[in-house]
Amino acid sequence: MDALTERAQPRWGRVFKRILLIGVAAAATGVVLLLIVSGDARYIARAGVEEARLLLRRRSIDKLIADSGTSAALRQRLALVLAARAYAADSLGLAVGKTYTTYVDVGRDTLLLVLSGSRRDKLHEVTWHYPIVGVVPYKGFFKAARARREAERLEGQGLDVFLRPSGAFSTLGYLSDPLFSTAMSRDTMELVATVIHELAHNTLYVKSQTPFNESFASFVGYRGAEAFFRARHDTLDARRAAARWRDERTLDVFYAELARRLDSAYAEPLSGQRLEQVRTTVFGWARDQFRGPVGQSLETYDWRWFAQAPLNNAVIIAERLYRMNLNLFDEIYLQNNADIAETIRAIQIRVFTQAGDPYQALYSRPGMKVED
Image: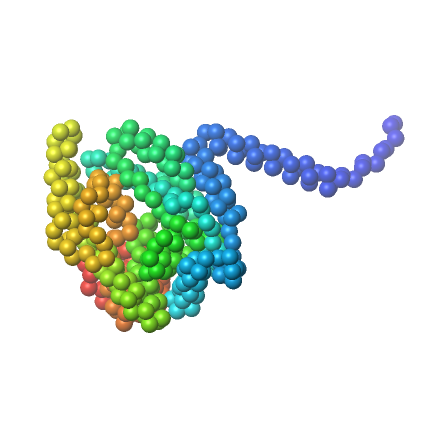
């Protein structure tokens, strides 16, 4: 009979390291395969790399203000941003976190380009799906060449496209967004409205509901800027913020009517020359409105820009993202005695406690007068 031998105790540390190495290798292999087969994964990876490069260049706003080497004009703008940020937190109840405590000079006049697309015979947007934010009807590019290539690809499929610059974006507070130099070229009212707009995204964001998210942030941005400047006894910028909000509501009504006319025109199957004739007629009406009653009623926008700007289905969809049912937000604002902080809280509570479409949740509030 063979002699019994004692089994050695397993070296758990070595076993754990092997398991960890196998897991890391498998994960790395999975990421590589995903990048190879998925264009969306490659896009997200590239965007992550570009954003990381920007974040590595962040500088503390407090330190920049204290630095004698910072120009007086920049110090003044940075101080205004910190004041708006503090007001958003203390008086509006927005979730500010570490957002806009740092600054990045991006070294160019455009931070990123945003692409929208639509069918030519219908107001039907192209959408993309991303983690956290869900389905959105636009795609951002830090590299202009990549943006143009994607726009050309969509045009090659017979789609309308709209490529526009953006000076700011939000990660919803996940990455402590810095203030980018591209936002600093805006006048003081628009700068403050932009800061509050982006902080509104940190506070309330509904997955895959872009028109609601952007329109809510537009409301909070301009109404919040008005309240901020009134608190500072800056009546000029307060009035400009109020006038800009009136313009946004005017444009909301106009683009809603334009969308209705396009939907009606596209109700029958159209193609070729007939489709182009219909589009020319409807877009011609829109330009006449900008040259006439709509354009002349604008207080803060130059009507000539709208009258001369390109018009197609993708443009209409993109413009409406930030201006959809704005009178609904103002109705709730009036119900709350024109108190923007109370209005924000009322909207949050209603949206968080009512499942489904956030617009429907607000329209169904007791006492609402605005029709859906």
